[in-house]
Amino acid sequence: MTIRRFSTLASRLGAATLAAALLVAGPAAAAEDGGLDRQRLRQTLDAMHEAGMYGTYSNVMDGRRSWKGAAGVADVETRRPVRPAMVHRAGSITKSFVAVAVLQQVGKGTIELDAPIGRYLPDLIPGERGQRITVRMLLNHTSHIANHTEVIFPTIESLDANRFRAFSPEELARAGLGAPATGQPGVTPGAYSNTNFVIAGLLLERVTGTSAERYITDHVFRKAGLRHTSFPRTPYLPGPSSNAYEALFGYFDPPRDYSVYNMSWAWTSGAVASTMEDLNRFFRMLLRGELLDATLVAEMRKTVPIRSLPGAVVDYGLGIFPLDLPCGRFWGHDGSIPGMQTFAFSDAGGGRQFAFGTNLRNYQQLDESGNPVAHAIDFALGDHLLEAACGPGAEAATRAVRPFPAIGVDGGTATP
Image 1 (cartoon, helix red, strand yellow):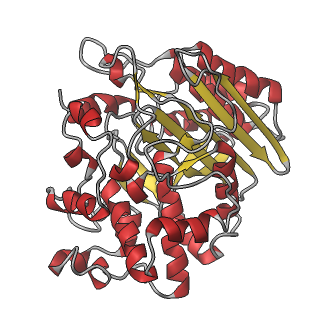
Image 2 (cartoon, rainbow, N blue to C red):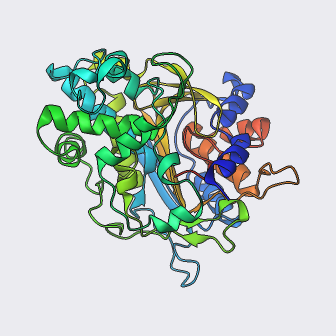
């Protein structure tokens, strides 16, 4: 069975559905006073595990106040518990780090945001295509370059076949560039594609003269003071971590562990590992203008409509996207790799952040028509998300906006 078929089925639990549902509640549901209801945060996190999520860990920051928690197990056989500080594969949140790195170079004048990518990588994208696709189009997914992961993972069996395979960045880029384009460059809606950020990584290497991993580590991770964020050098996660269980809508029964995986297939589109606390620190500093100047942060917030991997049309900026909740607009990204999902967002002023990760993915079952059925985990996940984002008063909003499907631009599909 092909991964593409599972992607199609999963589109019913697509990216924008939670955000759209939350808007039904309206601003009146927002709490007048922010703050952290630690008991409620603990209850909603426990409820995710009780609903069937193997393990989850969460961190919430509100000004100088913070809360962290974990619920469930990191290993279903040994019953080793999850811990709040576990290192977790952040998946496509990598794109936010890469966008910051590219925009740092824009600020230095070595890259022009609206210049054709062919100016910098003529050997990779020559001719008219290289002249029509701009750097901005890579970062906001309007280049219409195909998604290379659909090329290198054509079947479910290829998930295991490529577990320890080392892909070069050029190989990934050419896989996406060689597939049929999803549209004309710059035309909206765009199409979310991991290949865009692989090419952005190659662009960084061309203009800085160093590896993308080294540049991002030195100028983004270290600048933000992230102590547990990295591009892992081996297929193993560094430091204390959880297993990563992929159910693939019941195709893997029991769910299969993909925690050990060569992440070269994702590279600068999704290979970063981090902790929830580090992710919150990163988005806080970004939205407060401590990693980029205000004009470049404003560029990141300029959104265009794109089609997410699950199939929904969402607004997307430059490596970040907005999530509208009853208590206001948040900015950040989600990440999804086999067996792990991550959500990390900050309010627009960098005052409140939340990040949480899960170690079981695609746990829903399919109905007779082949459509995923909302699971109790989806309800519990939404409850925790609202409590983490909105604080006291979120419980009333929760009742108004259920059910809670999966969220994100690359979550909820069988495609890595």
